[in-house]
Image (cartoon, rainbow over all chains, first blue to last red):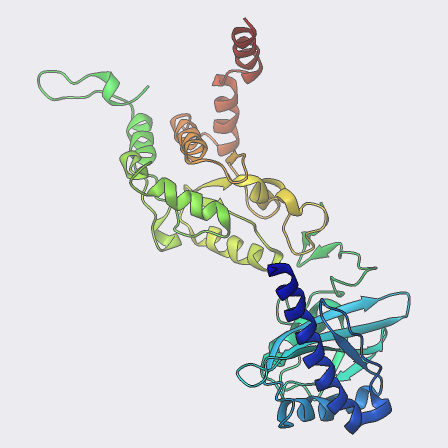
Amino acid sequence: MAEIEEGKGLSQSLHQSAAAYAVIREQFADAISDFDANETMPFFEVIETEKWPDIALFMRDHPKLKFNYMACLSGVDYPAEEKLGIVCNLESLGAFGHRIAVKVKCSREGGSIPTAAYVWHTANWHEREAYDMFGMQFTGHPDHRRILCPEDWEGFPLRKDYKVQESYHGIKVPY
Amino acid sequence: MGLLDAGITKHNVVVTSVDNVLNWARLSSLWPMGFGLACCAIEMMATNASNYDLERFGIFPRSSPRQSDLMIVAGTVTMKMAERVVRLYEQMPEPRYVLSMGSCSNCGGPYWEHGYHVLKGVDRVIPVDVYVPGCPPRPESLIGGLMKVQELIRMEQIGLSRADALKKLAEKSIDPQSVIEQHRKVARA
C-alpha cells in the first residue's frame, strides 16, 4: 500500500514538472529541447544557449512557474561531443513544490554560457566552481575567477583528460 | 635517563650535565602549535582533552607559532595550504620539531593518485622528525609519536646536529620485526 502511494506521489511530481515544462515550451518553442520525463530528475536542454538568461528569468518570475530556488548548479564534461555543460536543479519552494533540471551546453574549447548569477544568487559561486573545475566561461558573471583552486593553477581538474601539473610554486605535485 | 633518576641528595642538590637539564626542560614542556587541517585534528583534540590528557606531558597547544616548539601537522595538506604551513614553520623559534600525523600528511594518504590538490607528504616542504601512521591515528598512536619526539630530544647534545640526533635515536631503537615475530609466535601457541 505504502509502495503504491509512493509511486503515485512520484508520478504526480513528474506530472507537475511536465506541466511546468509545457509553460516554458509555449514561450520559447524551439529554443529548448523536448522534455525528458524520467522519475529521478526530469530535465530539458537549452538549445539556443544565448537565450538561457531569458529562460531563467521567465522560469523564476512566471506566476505559474515560480522556480524561486536553485538547489544546485553542476558542471559536466562531454568529451565525446566535444562539449562542456552545466546542469541546474531548480525548485519552486513554498509556491508549487515542483522541480526540474535544465542543461546548457557549450563548446569544449573556448566555449561560454551566459550567467544566471543575476537570476539566482546561488549561481554566482556555483558558476565560479564550474569554471574552476571545467573551464567554461560565464559571460556577464559579476566575479569571474576561480573559487577553490589557487588563482595561478594550471588546467581544469574535473575534465576527463586532465593531467596534473608537474610542479606548483616549486613544489612537486604528482605522487 | 631522566633528570630525576639522577637522585636528589639530602642537601637537595642534583648534579647533572647542562645537556641533560636543557633536554629535560624541552621535552617536559613541548608546546605544539594549535592548528589542525582535517579529520586528524579531531583526533588530536581528543588527545588534548581529558580522557587522554596531553597536559600531563606538559603538552599544551599554543595559539601562536612564536610560542610553539612543536608543529603537529594533523590532516590533509593541500597545495594551497602547503605555503602557509611553510610560513608558520618558519615563524617558529628554534629548536623546533615537526610531527606528521596521519597518512595524508605522511604521504598524501587516500589522495595519493587522484588528489590533484593534495601535497603528497608534508616532508616535501618542511623537515619532519616523527611520522605517526594511521587514518586517523588513535590518541594512543599520537601519544606514542609525541613520546618519540621526547626520545629524540633526549638524544640531543650541544653541538650535535639534528640529523646526528636522529641517527643516534635510530641506533638506540630496536628493530620492531623481532618483537612482531615474538608476539606472533605467542599468538600461534
